[in-house]
Amino acid sequence: MSLLVVGTVAFDQIETPFGKTDKILGGAATFIGMAASMLNVKAGIVSVIGGDFPQEYLDLMKEKNIDLSGIETVKDGKTFFWSGRYHNDMNSRDTLATELNVLESFQPIVPEGWKKPDVLMLGNLHPLVQKSVLNQLEERPKLVVLDTMNFWMDLTWNELMDVLQDVDVLTINDEEARQMSKEYSLVKAAKKILTMGPKTLIIKKGEHGALLFQGNHVFFAPALPLEDIFDPTGAGDTFAGGFSGFLAKTQNYSFENMKRAIIYGSALASFTVEKFGTERLAELTDEELIERLDVFKSLTNFDIEID
Amino acid sequence: MSLLVVGTVAFDQIETPFGKTDKILGGAATFIGMAASMLNVKAGIVSVIGGDFPQEYLDLMKEKNIDLSGIETVKDGKTFFWSGRYHNDMNSRDTLATELNVLESFQPIVPEGWKKPDVLMLGNLHPLVQKSVLNQLEERPKLVVLDTMNFWMDLTWNELMDVLQDVDVLTINDEEARQMSKEYSLVKAAKKILTMGPKTLIIKKGEHGALLFQGNHVFFAPALPLEDIFDPTGAGDTFAGGFSGFLAKTQNYSFENMKRAIIYGSALASFTVEKFGTERLAELTDEELIERLDVFKSLTNFDIEID
Image (cartoon, rainbow over all chains, first blue to last red; front, side):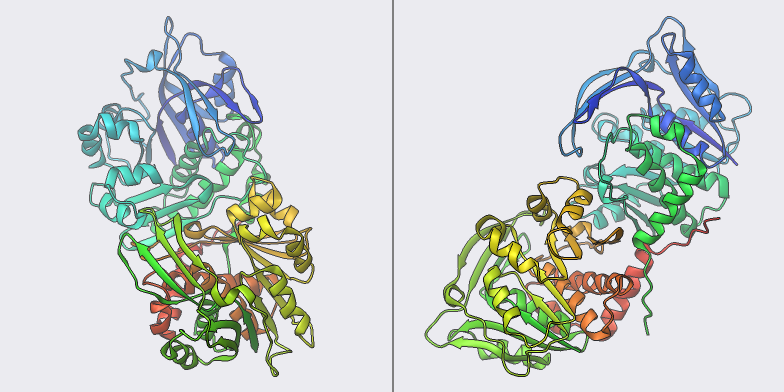
């Protein structure tokens, strides 16, 4: 029941119509790890931070039983920093600053004891960094999940196509699926992308839910209709963490179980957007998660007797 | 098991990236009636057409067992005509022409034998026309469903608010829900709209599915992910026809049954968009509908044991 996560551990500074933060805890691996920790899997992070990264953030992750032995600290370096401003509709945002800092020369090192994870979650990073982690493993994980974005499609297409050959599940958003496949229809896009390496594709549509494609199977998971989306930052990563965490925990990689994993991911993501950054995930209880899963059940389950 | 439908019977001329039609059969009541006919309910239409309306279109509707006794023919008048062009994404369209013609002075007359329908479906028309139909009934129907649009919110707000007092279910799209409530969040919008008269609200989100709100209950039905959306015209009306037709047929107006009704509406609408206008509905078989309902089941149903 082990999940190895590669991704950023970062500072985020966020502006929404509801307010503005200072530099707070962020990063894909942070959200993925915290989501997975709700599923009681052994999660370890491979990442890099600067000497400016506060101990309290590391303590928070340790409290969540996340193994930080794969996080390298560059004492005289600065932590990756992202700053963005969301528009009133909360569906679009402007990036105000991206300071790579210690990420610029990041060479991931998978620690001893983490070279045979059950599930590998490759967070959104340079495809060569993702590939390097895969290459350091002693056994091929039972499941490899990769997240990426338009940026890498624009700049490192060949490297991305190469690493995708070793990936089971790709997670991207709807616009990225269209860019990657050059198809507007998401069904056509999925068909094309499923010939590029991964046997399973998840298309994230934000407030419109997520689609899971595998062979001729399709599953749709809605996002929870919420009164307010306070801060969408990290929702996609939380979703990925819930998905890969659930699969690592249950050790069942069937399509039926991936459906459940997507619902867990969606339920966890619905908490992340309720507060700034990781705040809501940090305080989340098992009872709240169970209650939310029940809401998801009643949101979409119906019984039609088909004769 | 009777459904009375009030709405337009019209000519549509449609341009999509896939082609262009001549004047073809269209109109809200046409789609609603044809959808309901798939559910074997006794459906009757109240509408108006001009002397230019071809007998073959009337024959087509009669073949579907739709009662046309409430359709007035203005011999020297011209039938309502709408023409539109869809953009490449098929999500937005430009209206090229709207010729009201005989609709301009339409005074609906509910025929004898149709004054005690089980369900009344008030298609998108002037709220005073909708109200006039309600006033002609001898008994309050067990369910009154109303569809409207931004146009009537802009021009006839007070009349719309008045007729909504007598309505059980309102169906509008997401933008209209936002306009009507002055709330961006659809959950907040629904809460506000549910204080304006209807006890049940359906928000249609096109390719992103539909939300059903009643009290504190929410249900979400996805749209079917399709390779191509050939022509979206009439999808919303088909949905409304499937919804109201299913409820008229089953005579069960509970929230649980409304969930099923929404799935029937979504399944029927997924056929409409496969061809131009009513073409696909006209040739649709029971077997195809049952098969499609099964696809909807597997699209969203999952089993999570919550302990």
